[in-house]
Amino acid sequence: MLFQPPLPPKYSALTDEEMCQAIALRKQELGSRLVILGHHYQQHDVIRFADFTGDSLKLSQIGAQQRDAEFIVFCGVHFMAESADILTDDRVKVILPDLSAGCSMADMADLDQLEEAWAFLVEECGADLVPITYVNSSAAIKAFCGGHGGACCTSSNARAILEWSFRQGEKVIFLPDQHLGRNTAFAMGIPLDAMVVYDPRRAHGGLSAPRVAVSRVFLWKGHCSVHGLFTTAQCDEIRRLDPEFKILVHPECTWEVVQKADLAGSTEFIIRTVRESAPGSKWAVGTEIHLVDRLMNEMPDKTIRSLAGIQCLCTTMYRIDLKHLLWTLDELVAGRVVNQIRVDRETKKLAVIALERMLANVSPRPVAIR
Ligand code: SF4
Image (cartoon, rainbow, N blue to C red):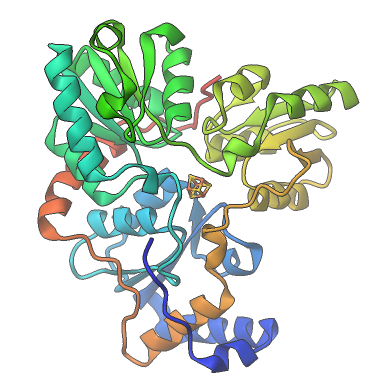
């Protein structure tokens, strides 16, 4: 995780209203030179200033389309800002308002670990192995995948990318989210016993040669700490309380939770499904709480609640707040670019291959994993 130095004290003295007024003014001053992107999990105060909102895939597509803007202020987490930098030309400066807004899942895979895993598995497999990384990963991991015949995916198109990868080779290593990998491969008809978890903290990933030989999918031992909070007991409790509730979860949830749910799909799939449902329908949603709250506020004619009785909050995304957004814009108006996220040229060259394969496999409508 990167370190965010403290902001000048004057920002702590401002009220929320003063900060909102100042942000609106800075946006006006910067005009078309500025685009603010906001991820769906972002807090409400901040996302209201986003010019575009979306999940990782949608924001990557929007980032790649930016031709006029000079600055993209990314209200998301570090890997998203890196992807935006990779997909835009050098003229565009991508800014993350708080450098400590990382992603715990992305931090679970580093390049050294992947190189070690790759050397071992390629040696043991004796088969074509394809590396696939979820977009929630560092630019270095994306570059490795792009440079080794692999690709990137999001939760919206993980299935399309896995199908693509099995046309390239016989076996796949999927990282860093074991749950998205398992849920997607299982939905494609790959049995659980043909998948195995590779643990980067153990010698040879904790795998024996015979286990490697019979496995088709190697799942990196990584997970999302937010979606990991949803449990099968919560699903049982909802069904007990009111069987009319439909359970709708993100595929970063465990396989067991996804099997208990009625539907599973990406953030965009969740939004579309709830929006298109009939008035009066009831939804228990297993994803980050800010998105669930927004769905509740947007559709008072439906009963929408979090699947969990606890607050499932992405604490790193939450670090982007009004203070940091205002500070970033103040600095831009003063002619200074702070917190620019830059991916080096060599990494960009290979990472863009992985990202472009991802963007070439996008379905016009987000599809269910289950
Ligand atoms: S919700 Fe999970 S995967 Fe998404 S940014 Fe937060 S920690 Fe990372």
